Amino acid sequence: METEIKLSFSSPSAARKALRQAGFFIQIRRGFESNTLYDTPQGSLRAAGVVIRYRQWHGEHVITYKGPPRLKPGARAGSLHKQRVELETKVADGAPIVATWEAAGLRPGFRYEKYRTVYARQGERGHAMLDETPIGTYVELEGAASWIDGNARLLGFEPSEYIQLSYPALQAEACRKLGIPFGDLVYSPASKST
Image (cartoon, rainbow, N blue to C red; front, side, top):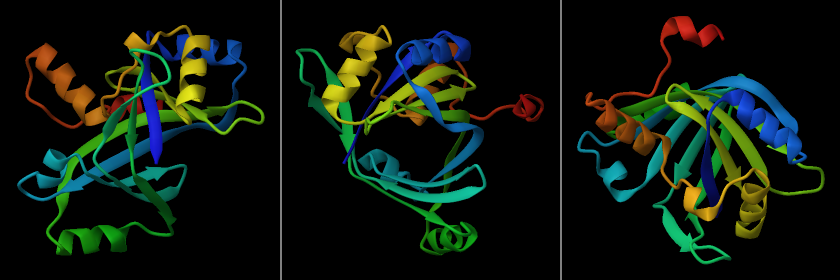
């Protein structure tokens, strides 16, 4: 069971500074991450809140299934954490898996890219992922609800500032605000080198 929230930061440098001050260290260095969500042509998986994802990051190929999200009250009043079943495995080559999905009728439905750095604290089981996306900087806290709440507080956030939205939902919100059609959350080719 995956339990997580996102926190929005003004910039990657602000997030890095807050994480350092909270005692986090880099566990996995910054790397470009490419994700493709697969769905039926009718979008039935997305409508059901189910995710089938193919991810490439640091030369690894990762296949993920996420069940429908559940919003569960946290330890304190007003605190919410997104919980969902997550099954994930690394594979040597994603192409045969993707070909199998496509043969079964699934199609690439949404792509999103980010630069991710994974942070941890000595002796703790939770993780903080610094995600630099084309629509903003987020720190995703994943762990036990009490660990999330304590670390969100250390990073300067209250439960009312927790974000439970997925990256596709954040992109949909950003597109609505800009008055543009919904599309993939990807960098321009020129900006991928930074």
